Amino acid sequence: MTRTVKAEGNDLQAVLGTALGDLLGCSVQEVSVKVEAPGIEDLVGEVGLTLTITPEPRPASAPGDDVDAGASSEAAPTDDATGDLADDAADDAADDAADDEVSDVAEVDLDEEADAAADFLEGLLDAMDLPGDLRIKIHDDHAEIEVIEIGNGALIGRRGQTLEAIQELVRCSLQRQFQRRARVKVDAEGYRSRRLEKLLEKAEEAIDEVLDTGEAVRLEPMDVFERKAVHHLVAEYDGVESRSQGREPARRVVIEPA
Amino acid sequence: MRSEDVLEFVASQLVDHPDEVRIEIDEDDRETVLELHVHDEDLGKVIGKRGRTAKALRTLVKAAGALDDENVTVEIVD
Figure 1 (spheres, each protein chain N blue to C red):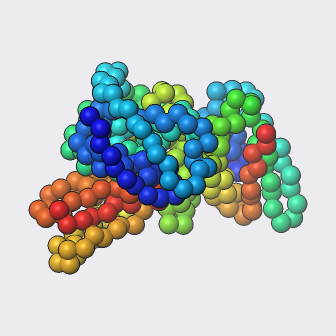
Figure 2 (cartoon, rainbow over the protein chains, first blue to last red):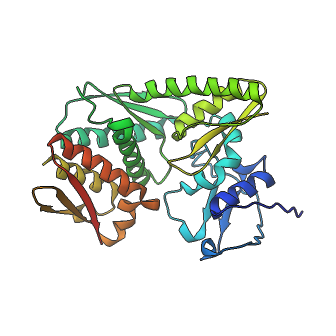
Figure 3 (cartoon, rainbow over the protein chains, first blue to last red):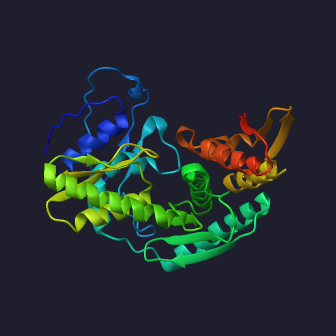
C-alpha cells in the first residue's frame, strides 16, 4: 500500500508529526517510527521521505508508558534515551486516541515511582532547609505528591516556574532510575490543582467560542497532565474535538469544530 | 549555602556517577557562579534534550539562592 501526503514546515519533527497524523489517524500507538538520516534536519527545500511502517506489538512490560502519547518514535539525529521525542513527534497524531484509553499502570510500579519521587523531594526540602510534609496519592494512571506546610512559595516561584523545574528534575531522576517514563505529578501547596481548575474553566469558554464561531481556538501551553484533562473535557462535548500541537514546554491544546 | 546544597543534591540524583559530582564556587559581590562538574558520561543527563534539564536545574538553584538573597548562576563545565 502506498499513500502520499505532503506536509510543510521548518521543523522535521513537527512536519513528520503532521504527515504521520494524516497517514495514520488511527493506529499510531501500534507503530514506532525511526528516521535514520543524519543531517537531514539541516536540509532546506523539499525533502521526499519514504517511510516503511511495520506494525509492532507494544512491549508487555511497559504498558502505555507515555502519558499522553502511546506511540514511540525516534528521529535519529537528535535521539537520546529520555524518550520524550515520542511525545513531541507522535502526539499530534496520537493524543486523541491515547486519551481514550486510560492505561493502567501496575500499582507496584506507581508505588515505587512515588517512593523515589518522595525521596527526591525530601532531599530537596532538606537541601533548601525548608519545612514541609509530603502527601502522596496513587491514582489509576499516575501518582501525585504534594508538598504542604512549606509556609511560603519557595517551591512554586513566579508563575509556577520553580515548581515546573522541580517536576522536570523529578521526571529526569525517575527516568534514570527506572528506565521508563514515570507518571508522578508534583504539586506544592495546591498550586497545580488551582491552576488546573482555572485552565478547565478557560477551556470551557473556548469550547463555547468554537461552537459559536466555528473557528479553532488555541489554548495556552500546558503540561502533559493538564492537556490530558482538557482533552477529556472536550471529549464530553458534541461538535468539538481537540489535539495537541507544538513542542514541550510550549505544547498547547487546540480545540476545533468536529 | 543552600544553592550549592541543592545543586549538589539534585545533580547527584540525575547522574549515574554521583561520586563524581563536584561543584566549584566563583563568587564576587554581584553574583555567585556555581560550576558543576560531572563525569563525562553524565554530561548529557544534566543538560538534557534541548537543554531542558539544565534550564530546570538553573531555575531551581536560582530559587534556592534567592532564599539567601544570593544571585546565583550555574555553569555546566565539560
